[in-house]
Length: 101
Image 1 (cartoon, rainbow, N blue to C red):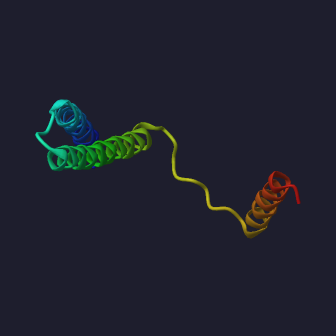
Image 2: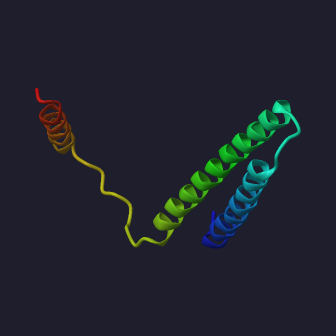
Image 3: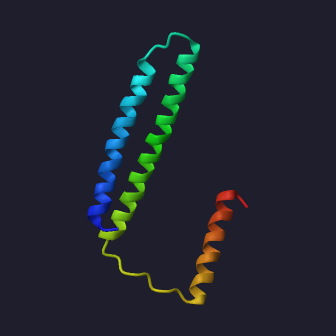
């Protein structure tokens, strides 16, 4: 994806978040005539909350992709076999110290 497509995706998801938030507030403000209506409103509000969270995560995904598109970091240099084992040992050592082993 190009930068422009990512920005358009972020904008579309931001609009979707706003729409979902408005609908959640409307569902929570409306008072049902009976318990069934209230449960139905809560169900719709919870569905919209899930949609809102999904849109937020999509924006986060787009921002990460945009970050890597705009960074000046070239491709990583492949590691030698000796370097890989040293890094792995360091990771396990760090994990063991955090676990208290």
